[in-house]
Length: 83
Image (cartoon, rainbow, N blue to C red; front, top):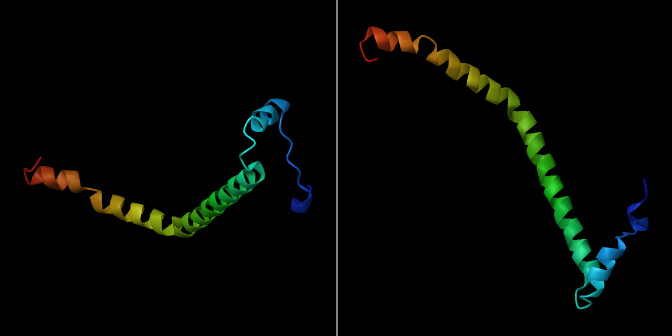
């Protein structure tokens, strides 16, 4: 794996030609901002995944509790003539 400081981005010639058509664009800045946004996005996804893993036990418990509370409810409502 190369170090971040050593990173050089290579683009296909067709992309390079397209970039040359728009010299007014700061392509270096554009790429830096794009990478920063991607890093922020991936960091947020990691954080959400970590939170989900922490809450998984609670989620499982609540689903189990709700299923237990519904067990037999249909028969009870049928006996009462509500269904």
